[in-house]
Image 1: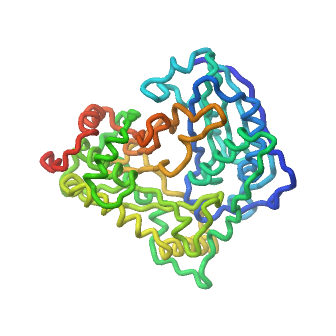
Image 2: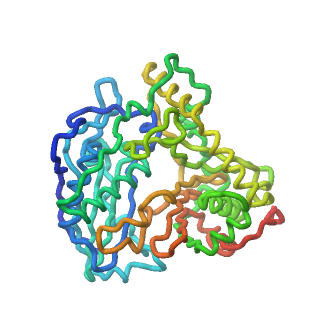
Image 3: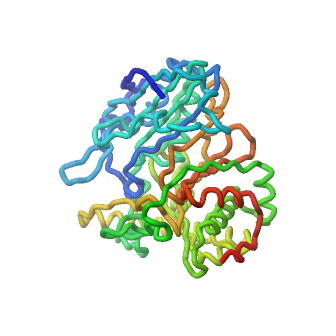
Length: 443
């Protein structure tokens, strides 16, 4: 796909200088637990789509309350990473694509080359724009917005709040009134008078030595496994049926995670006694003591690790597997969060470098990792011409990595994007919509 375009650096429009202007903000322990990578998201809009000028002008107004996005990463003399709120700006690429948008959509998703639709990942994260946006204008007038941001600036909840602000700035124009999000990062990581961590955070949230935290490195797959991207659409009717089978109160995310965990365990052919776990992101804003405002802009995520033997994942009822997920998430409580903050304080005092636990290699088998966009507003992002027809994460080159996204076109539906081993793809497709609770026979 030949894409041509121009590049500019947009600086925010301030009605008054931001209180944090020029500050060098140290990363909190939550920031450092986030991966040192750019996170891309793709939104597709059919014609008529908002103009580039309207989007850029709205962006200049929307970034102003979030000065971290217009800043840069740097390292101080002690080797600590900082966010320099220097107002250097946001990278915007305007591209022209010589195709109709319909030509590159297949079954409600971008067909291929998604990586061409957002700015190329920088080779070096220091000194580059922390928010980068590519506006891909198609021959038909359709638009694909590729947004990429550095994870040390914000988590998913924060970015959802930001894109909502961008949406409002475009729609309201000169009548836009900027919000005042909570941006005091230091108050989210206050240690006890005598820091006293009680959990092994050095091997949970961070890498321990040269091993890789809690994620195994594809022990259940061969070294030459090929990974394919898979998209599965779960209709509202499917979700309702699944919830009925679980019974009681349960979130859509937990029910779907239990379902997919069962199916991927079945096609992997794990040994009955083998353990499998899922790394589940948990928003800590409302779990901390005192709670952190929901409009806090930064990182406030830790992870739960529901862990079961393969035979139990397959033979237990949906209700029981959901219960295991819920119990693991419940462990991320105020005591755990305070322990994590205390650990970060002691690590700083000892001059210890902390490296976030990353998905190791190209395969997570027998484990998995999940990110949920279920509570975010990505699928509702309406700049004035209607919500997107596609909301899509980047290519997922890691087997066992999955993202749940609310369907932008089917109310109540959910799209699953997942990296799957090529030789397991067809087997997964055959059973992904079945409600068979008796898969233990496969063991």
